Structures are given as C-alpha cells and as structure tokens.
Amino acid sequence: MKIERIEVRFVEAELEQPFGWSQRWTNVRSVIVMKVITDDGIVGWGETYGSGDSVPGIATLARVAIGEDPGHLGKIWHKLHRAVYQSHVFAKGASNAISAIDTALHDIVGKSTGKPVAEVMGGRIHDSVPVYATGLYYVDGYALQPLLDEAMGYVDQGFSGMKMKVGALPLSEDAARIRAVRETIGPDVRLMFDANESYDPATAITFANMVADNELTWFEEPCASRDDAANKLVQERSPIPISGGESLSTRWEFAPRLANRTFDIIQPDICGVGGPSEMHRVGLMAQAFGVKFNPHFWGTGISFAAALHALAVQPVNQIGQTSIPYQNESVLEFDQTPHPIRENLTEPFFTQTNSRVEVPARPGLGIEVDETVLERFTRGKAVIVDEPA
Image (cartoon, helix red, strand yellow):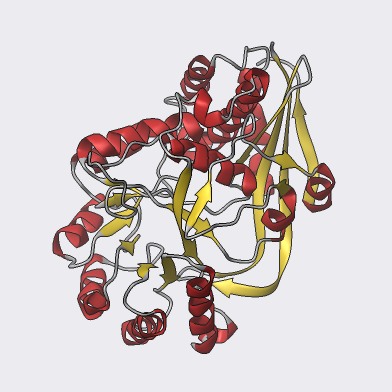
C-alpha cells in the first residue's frame, strides 16, 4: 500500500452572529482539510489551521509523503520534519502540515487493519475522555446576560467544567464577569478563564489576585505564548495555576517549557503539535515532568476524533488507583461555539454525557466525512499532489 494522492483545501463558513476574545472579533470559522488516498483506494482525513494562503505550502510539504507506505508512521513523520528542519519554514506552520498528514495516516492505518486509531497507537487505556465546554466569548457588545445564560446552559447539559474569555475589558469589568459566572453556575462546576496572551506579567498577576477567590481551575495564556520569562513570572506568583502551549509545536518546543515548568498545565493542539504521533510523545513527556496535560481543541470532528484517540492512550498523570478528571486524568477542550463546518462535516457529531465523550470504536478515526458539505464550504480550489518531491 502506497500514498498515491493528497488533496488540501481551505474551508470557511460565515457565522450568523460574531463573537470575540481579547485579540479580535470574528464572523467566520475556517479550517484546512486534507484528504490522503492510497493506491488501493483507502482514504484518510486530516485537518489543521491556516488560511487560504497556507494551502500551497502545506501541499508542497505533503508531497514528501507521496509514494510512502502509510503504515510507516514514524518514518514518514521524521521524513517530513527533516524536510523543513533548519529551513525557517518550520516555525511558519510546517508543523500544521505534519499534523494533518499524521492524522490522515493514522486514519488510513486504522481502516486498513480494521482497528480504531487508539489501537494503532498501542491500545486504549480509557474508553471515554472527560471534556469541558469552551464558549463564553464576548457577544452582543460585551453584554453580560447572554454570558450567564450560556454558562447555565452548560450546567444544564451536564458539563462538569467550562472556560470563559477575558482580556478585552478593563480588569475590574472582566473580574466582575468571572464573579457573575461563578455565582450563576454554583461552586461545584469547574471554571477556567483564558486571556489569549493579552496581558503583561504585572497585569496578569494583578488580575489573578483579583479573581482568585472564585475557585478557578486555571488561568490560560496570560502572556504571549513564547514569552517564557513572562509566563514563568506569572506561574511563580499567581495564586491560580497557569496553562498554555496551544500554539507550540513538537516535543522540541515543549521540552524547555516542561523542564522549566513555565506552565502548570500544557495544552497542545493536535492540529499544530504534530498530529496524534507527537501529541502522544508530548503527553508522555508531560507525565514524566509532573505537568498536567489538557489539550486544546478548536476544529471539526476530524481533529476532535484524533484528539480523543490520543487521549485514550494517555496514562494518568500521577499513578493512582482512580482516574480523576482535572486531578490526574487529562481533560479535553470541547468547543461549543458556533461552527457551521463542525456541525455538518462529520458523522458522528460528537456529544458528551456527564461531561465525557466516548472514544470512537470504528476503524480509523471512526468518522465519516460528508464530502458534499466539504465542497459547499471550500473556498478556492483544492491543491492536489500526486507526484513525489
């Protein structure tokens, strides 16, 4: 079996209502979808982040995999990585391309062997993965009541935790929003907040102390994600655990942050860290360093399925007889914001029960992609590669 053809396309959908976070407002959701086809017709799906301008570069790197046996997952991963090592391309998104290819290859290997990806990765430790709701963005000109209604909706749905946005308003106003959400959801539901890199260290420390009495589980991305000195200062002085790492890629970027304990919790994204292969490696590194491992997610059912499989093989952080979410068992972000592509592209449409999602049991990623939906949301033309580099 050989990789014969790869298609890369940019897909985007407009939202009925825009929402915002500390950096900007958006009225669209978008992803890059990759389709990998073998010479015997098996199709694997991958996904990553980027713009329409990213598609040609991702396709160029994908060409390195043409003609390879998709079962040689490690060989292909390192061949792709070596192709961009020292080229300065790597820091500009090559890991996104590797992530999409690696996800698609796991899907192919699973389908060709009749095994779910978790079995391809060594066998599941968990049959389901604990999740928390991500939403609670700024909407309606920063109105408070929609935020509280949304938060209560997550409680009613059975989520055990949720994450909200801060950083676009004066500290006192965002602090008041956190207090209002905590009062609305009660003391027993986990609450996290995400500044999306919007603060300098002094401001982040001030804010952490302002809101620390609200029983908060973590403070996400207080400062620029690669400003290690700033994040370390906040980590040392904040009364709330600090998390970050969604934009970091590969074990090489995570290694110094783990060794220095820059973050109390790391949050790699399977669309950027390097796919299921590298997500698993980074997860094991986090366990070895005693740093919590709670991955980021903001894509469609393709990458969510891949993340579920990667977490199904993640050991508990500190060994004990009981797996306890947030304490020693990794929790996965479960984006609940509007996303017309995610809501229509894949079957099954993932849902949670008691704040857990079942790991797919069907071969490969365990999903089916509706290619009519994919075509409907495609912007521009798919780039196709079918010749080796």
